[in-house]
Image (cartoon, rainbow, N blue to C red; front, side, top):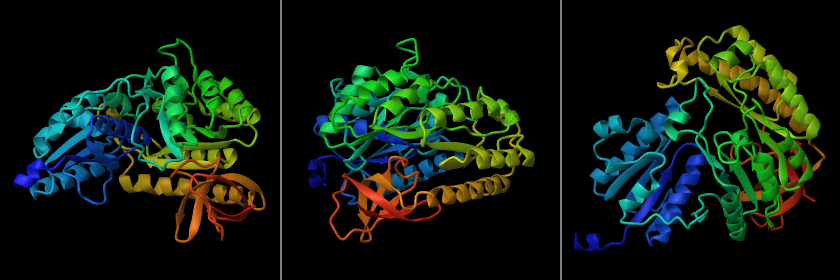
Length: 435
């Protein structure tokens, strides 16, 4: 026991949920390291004695995963494998009082904005001078960059404002400094994330400033790709597209969650936009940036959704032919305005509708990919796996989009760019050779 007490603390951070949570974990890691505390992400060696679980509370499945992970760590603590278990993130923020009663084995619970309080557990100081200095959980060549926190939108299904609060933009100077620091560390691709990109700047600059931010970011030397995630369609600032077209290092890629296409569903979801307005926006986007990759996210099984609504959504997909589509089944979240509605679509029916919708998109994706055969694309090498290289084009973000399988007898450095000629195409992935 004496040697145990003399052992230096080693903290393992387990991150669940979205890329925004990932950035929070990376920032916590940077703060711990600056306080001379050993820290790792998702440690496989199990040589740590303290765990911080960064939870997700977005939908029911995410909550279940978070709770199961907490219980696993508490079990390890009860068997003497861990000294402390701390929990932070969205689930902890939203349900702290209930969770404290249900899972007493956790040493402390923290909300989403309580980093200084977490550090106090380690007798560590919050260092305000550490702008962007974080321990990357991603490979060295790409990173997520959070430009704002929280959200002012009032979408009926979304609990994010309950867990993250209102929209708070990060000052441009701070974002640029963070980007420059990341590039110095070898990052070549930055994915801009926030709950709502297009709202950026309204709170601190009194106008939408995403286009201006992109101009400054694209001037950062060594930054080869800038990618935009989570742009709200209502009141979308079209000047962003002018900058995208003008600057070579801004990927022709836009992640714009639309959630549905039937007007009655859009109204019930409080999306502040109609199908007709969305269609006009899509036309404008494609006119301003020819060849742009459009990614969207949809929800199946929202209260009151009918088979006609699902058919309308499928027809919308067939007409618009998005490059990438993700889909969630509706989760009935207390505290949201949709919670007052009857959750009248059974779980298995939600799943069936989601599968049907994705089958439509799978066919579209296959057809769009077939058009790429014989064409050459600038591709970043992400990793080598099973004797082959896996990369992405500018039209593909990490984990959620297509991969390019590259067969090469020559060594291809991870994180470098190569030109790849597509030789085969499947539903969601491509194959090619370096040219």
